[in-house]
Length: 619
Image 1 (cartoon, rainbow, N blue to C red):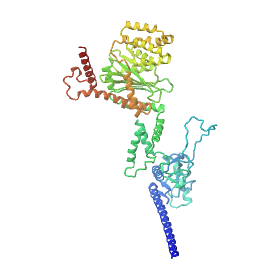
Image 2: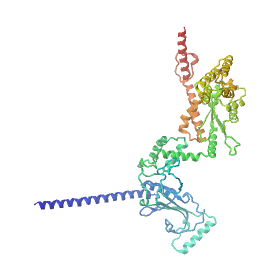
Image 3: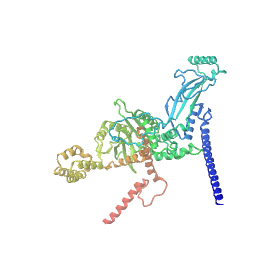
Image 4: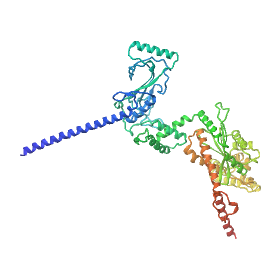
């Protein structure tokens, strides 16, 4: 009985093993069928762009270069592969007369055959695409004693090239249907070929159609790399690249902002279709890919001659605006013609007419474009803060260049008397202003004066002498009258820390311009610093240039004229119009504060309250 039971158990185990093997075989067959079905579906997707193709959907012809482009896009998307051009001319060219070609009726071809079609044809071009993981073309051999002796960035994987042999063979032909023959006979072919050559030699234009024959590689021909979206380094799709370049042209340069735009763009691109995988870098490029495309676009547009041409186009657009005054003189290659750009809108001229009698502030900022040129702003103090009255760019920050720009500013505006200027300690700006307005009053910025003193004293004096000299120089600057000024000057010159080096520096840089920074010479109420202009520089750089500027000249000027200056004047108008919204004023508000900007009214009300409290304490 035990022997029978053991035999039955062994038979049951053998049957179970056979059933498991059959199940495994069925699962493998099902997987193979699924793979075949997926391949057939994929083939059907790209095969629709073939006008005629082989049973494996890897060889055939398209009726146009556009159909071939769509074929390659579909094939690359279905097979998760990418190809780059190796040789040959562009398929967009239809010039079959560019070179002498033999009239053919069929072609075995070195790589792709063209069958007999009863019509003669000429080969327009042959080209070849290879997998972007193909052979490495450029190699730099450097002999070094140590492998990492160079200071350049160390690249663990210096290239994506792995020598993949997969290639796409392409032949574009021009077919002449007017010379069709019915029978494939040699005499008929020779006669039709002769007639075609004669027609072309006499300059006739026979009917012609074009075909693009292509032979696509099998998946198994790819070697040395995978096809997973996260594993393969895909090139970005042409539509994605164009969208990124459009964003860069519009001044959107931050990778995160471009990513948000691309997500919406991809959804519109695949409307009604399945979206590609988020790991597919063709349609979802990384931040580094986006920045590389933007950098490549900038490199193409940041050519000096092209940049100035686009500035000329921008100037033409600005001149069409109502009341805008623009002057642009491009840089001459021989160096005899210097760059000059100046802009003033109608609203900016209104600010000059209203506020220029008080004071004009002039200051430059740097590193706003690729080139080493300064950007100047002429600023007025209004009833609601500092506003831009004009902007200009000069090639060199010297007296003649700045004077030429200020001469334009004087001709464009009706200034009733010589204005008062507040500038930094800049001799170039000082000479330019005195050249244009000889009788104008010019004062140095107090903040930058203190800054210049502190920098020089820190670099050339000991700490104890530094503090004593700073205290005495400040006393000179804050002298309320001329008698105090003389006393403070004598005290400074009698100081033991006032040695020859200090005397040479102070007398050459500051003492001969005493009337421009000593308080006793300030007979009128004007801004004591150019910090108002510095605040406008910060707004320009961090609110606008950080997001829109591409560091080209035309990109910078477009941002300044179309975004920054419009924003500033709109801010000024809004501050003055908010007081006329129709709301009644507080009856206790003084009459001189009616219809004034709210910021100005709040400032005055706070000072009135403080003055009342001080008066009550004194009493």
